Amino acid sequence: MTINRTPLALGLATTLLLGACAPITSYTNAEASRNVTLDTSTTRVDLHFAPGSAQLSPGDAARLRGLAATGAIGAADHVTVAAAGTPYLAEQRIGAVSSVLLHYGIVVTGAQLSNMPQNHALVEVMRTLVTLPPCPNWSKRPQPDYANQSSSNFACSTETNLGLMVANPTDLASARTLGPVAGQPATAAVQRYLADKVTPLPSSATASPFASAAGTATAAAPTTGSQ
Image 1 (cartoon, rainbow, N blue to C red):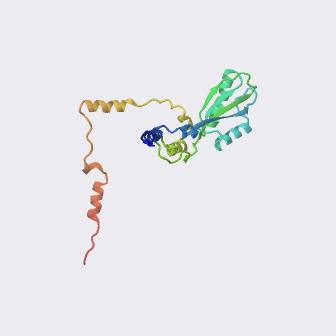
Image 2 (image 1 turned 90 degrees about the horizontal axis):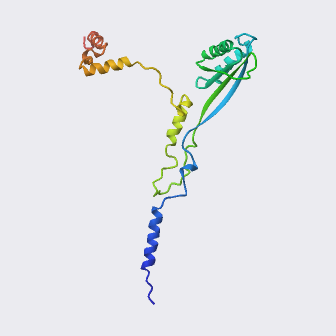
Image 3 (image 1 turned 45 degrees about the vertical axis):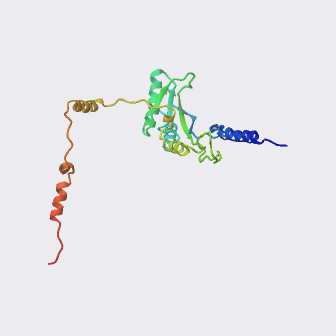
C-alpha cells in the first residue's frame, strides 16, 4: 500500500508559518505601565484671628511659618485661603496669611466659603505627587517578537528621569499660562534684517577685550637664556 505524505507535510508547514506570523497575544503593554502617574493630596490648616481683627494669633502665625519652613507647604502647591468676616475683613485676613507665606515664595489664592466659623481662616494645600513607573520592567520574555511589539522596558528610563527632575509636578498635568513677553527687541531684529541693516559681528582681532592685554603681557615676559 502506498501512502502519499505530501499533503500532510504541506499542511504542517503552512501551520508553522502562519503561527510564526500571527500576533503574540500572551503579553500586552497594559500588564505593566511605563508612564508616570500623578496623585493629589489635600491638607487643611485651621487658623484663628482675634475678634474683629486681621491679626493672626501668635501661635498660629508661628505654626504657619513652621509649615512653610519644613516644606509642608511649598511653592509648587496650590494654596487657597478662605477667611470669615465681612468682605473687607475677610480680604484683610487673607492678606495677613498671604504675607506670612510670601516670605517663603508661596503665593496663595483667595476663596469664599459659606458657614465659616467666626474669626477663623482655612488654608487648603493641594499637592500633586509624581509616582514613578516600576522600572526596570523586564516582564516581557526576551524572545523573538514577530508582532513587532516594543520591549516591556521601552521608555522606562525616559519616564523615570522625567518624574525625578520635574520641579512642579502640576506641569505634567497642564501647561502654564504664558506671561507677557518683550516683543520690541524681536521686532527690531526682524526689521533690521529686512532692511539689510544687520549689525555686523566684531572682528576676531577686537572680539576679546583681553587680546591687547595678552599681547602686552607676552612682550613684557622675561626671557631665559645664557648670560
